[in-house]
Amino acid sequence: MRLSFIPQRRRAYILERLLRADAPAVSKLHREEFARPWTDGEFVALLDQDSVFGFAAREIGNPKSGLAGFVLARLVAGEGEILTLAVARAHRRAGLGRDLMDAVLRELHAERAAELFLEVDETNAAALALYRRLGFSEVGKRPAYYAHGDSPKTGALVMRRDLR
Image (cartoon, rainbow, N blue to C red; front, side):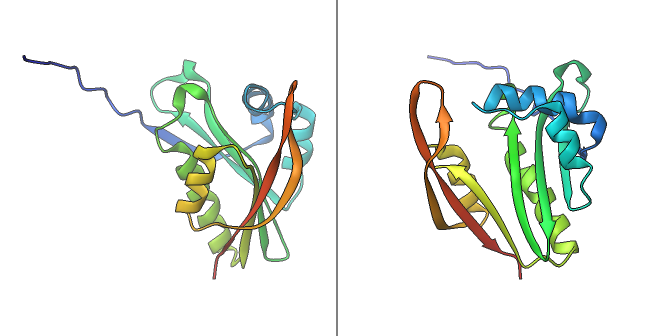
């Protein structure tokens, strides 16, 4: 039996600094991914803080695809924190989560941060696998932290990565 296939072209993305003007697109993607989404205003308020920064991923050559993903982080007193990260469903499994995290890690290394923290839903296997591959380890847990509509709440794992 002979099988033929058409190889898929790997999508290319560009990462850019997250700006105030990105708040509506970021909020829209956040609504698709989180049970308690943040509003445009909440994103603007965060981006207006000197300690907060982020990156947006956009597909090159496909302006209609919208925002492919984003990450928002904070750096205070040498300690970084991932505030939120989301990758649009149509763009998953393309390495965007890692690319976004790498951008944050480069920024924090340049700023000589000592460590990076994040919280992740204990049931989010893909995110947990990514964070463990990036060298994060569990340092705590918040029981019944994430709401999922009518489903029972799930816990958040607090994870940390040393940067020095």
